Image: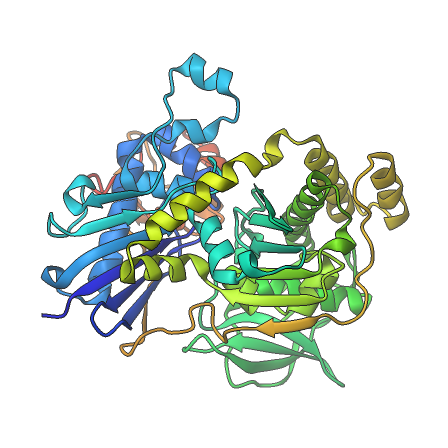
Length: 544
């Protein structure tokens, strides 16, 4: 019998799990899900779904996927001694099955009006039997780290600890480049935290040919003498040269070692940089005959993608501008930047700096990998770290900046949206920035030192390697009374989450992991008979 621990990172774009040999302190295996199991493309979509569909339903979907991850790791349940879970407060609350409505409202008056009592989100050690639906022996220990504030959770603590931010004497910023974009600014002994809903573009979602980091994903492009070389992730999640293409016409000039399946979030950043450097992109337009950047015959990048990417880049830049204003410093004072998460690992850091994802005065940029999974693994190996994180969370609560209530963030993000979505000239951007008394946005100067600590966001996949779960959670079937089987809902679904199983009976198959959730509802809107009701879909594992 091998005593085993399970480390889980419940990310907004997907779940990651590792099995760890507790005696040898080595990783056995890794499992990645292709998507998040809940309908929706970002953390707010997941929260809205949980409120509308009910906590029990959302909890059931999350736990069903956790069980799927643990099962895929291939560890006998009787060998599992403890589980540690890391993620943002919404994901961890859904995992635990506790009140989540307080996370939807920033104002205390609204919570009081609705009778919402925020639950205790301090560090916890539970038994597996305390988590409804978790298919583990009742005595297995479950460790859940503390949250700082309602939008800054254990994953943010992890990025501060695992990156080395706390030991750095420079003025430094650490950012987790995901849909929730947690960030922390350290000035001397003071740390100010914040979080902005950057949206899914940096995870390759809401991009027409976007995809999460997986084999076949373009994560970078480079200009060569003739054409542009695509760099693609292979089966081991390592970079390999892909096709050499004419990005204006889509012609493949030279076949690469790995085929192109789509564009991951880091590829989006590289395309923006190279497109602007080649004068093919002038925000928000693409100056090619078809108004697209082609990465081959079947994959391209369009003007709508620019606007989606701009929402994410603009939110992150507005975020660190706001933290600098809160600290009373200028952007050039931030000398070190840490890039966490999958996007922060695989992105070309120099290009990220140029498009606005990194403070422009940074002289050192560290790419530090998936810190959330690393923290969960550390807790599995040394549970005492759970309580060390608790102490850190308490210390940070007095220095948190709520971007949703910040006039600085509101003004900075308005300028970013005008720049990326409407083509505001830079002169006007700077004029309004001065008028709003925002920290000055300087041009990046010089070439910073870039330290990439790991080749992959998860550096050690274990001696059994990595497995992928493509269909996450359970698929659902539904039959609406009065459905004619016309297939309009299927045709209008942007994520191909629906499939018509029977035209005669109007039976529809639904993949919750592909569904954009309550923020979309194109299926319901497009139904000519008005019989499709999103609220009736049996998303609960019991109903699927």
